Length: 172
Image 1 (cartoon, rainbow, N blue to C red):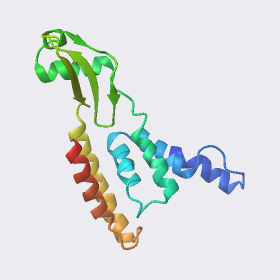
Image 2 (image 1 turned 180 degrees about the vertical axis):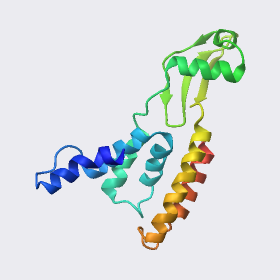
Image 3 (image 1 turned 90 degrees about the vertical axis):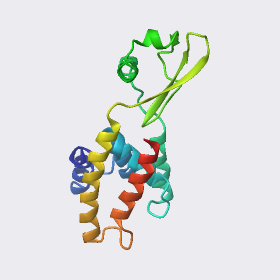
Image 4 (image 1 turned 90 degrees about the horizontal axis):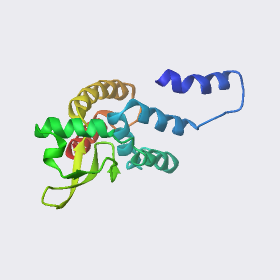
């Protein structure tokens, strides 16, 4: 991912060609989106850390709060039926296939109960807790290296990852 995102700009710099395409901070945002949930959440977290990122970088990272790819209806149906151990039609009289809202951790669908009550159904993305915890273990390893190299000066990258982890776990 990093090689894919950085190769073009590095070659352009070596060949002394003018920059083309997204800025470096836009490339970082796009890479975080492509890497998935944990890295998308990390970018969202960093968007709130004005002590670390510039105003421009914070604004770019804040774009990670928008345009999150929703789960497909089949994925949603599978999650609901697996969790409730019943077919969707037995649980809800009506279940809207298009989400009302989609975020990095979950999405919300409108539904109607069999007694015609209007409902909002929140569906968490499947497997995200396990994936998140594995990614955080890797981020902690990288943070230890970053701290040993002094990459953020007096700011502890390990402490940042711990704070980010707690911030995200509350949402999960």
